[in-house]
Length: 215
Image (cartoon, rainbow, N blue to C red; front, side):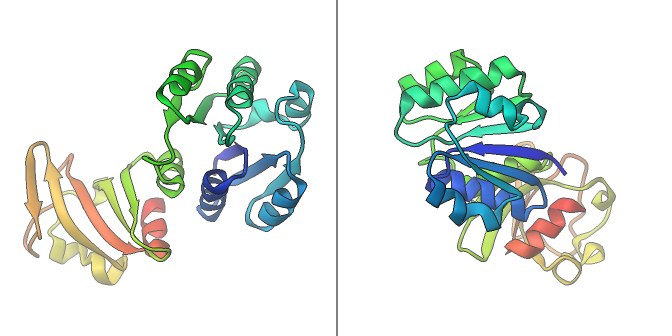
């Protein structure tokens, strides 16, 4: 289990925070709006209302001890940049920040953000899955219940055929394609063998995909 602090609980921040928590991680949500904090509190580990640009507030919450900080502040570009600077100075290991423009993104990178994303291009759910998993390469939410994931093949699957793995019965998922380098196998057959470095495109319910991620 990893620990995450999400600063700014707008639509994007809420999506990230809630998904990270559902994936079994410790999540602290911070926002200046008490009503928003009350609303998110049941979906995260801890929720705190406070001035996120106040260094003393951040220090009192032990921010430096979190593995990842997500700066998801909405329309206030100045606050977003200031919070990123404060987090970097406190020694937070990894900072992901939301940008509103290319210029904003450049500034965030220069002041210490390890990764800058644009909500229009990176859904909150996809970002959350990428943060907590080492084998998920991409994640696309099809609906509130179903998604497509692109993952590296687990080592214990290597050398086995799809028939032997029987993933539909064992894991509740379907393998849509297998990629290896420039090779792409669309609609793989039962006797196709999983090889080292294979990338699998799988589809299934979010519950089943989350279980697969932990195996």
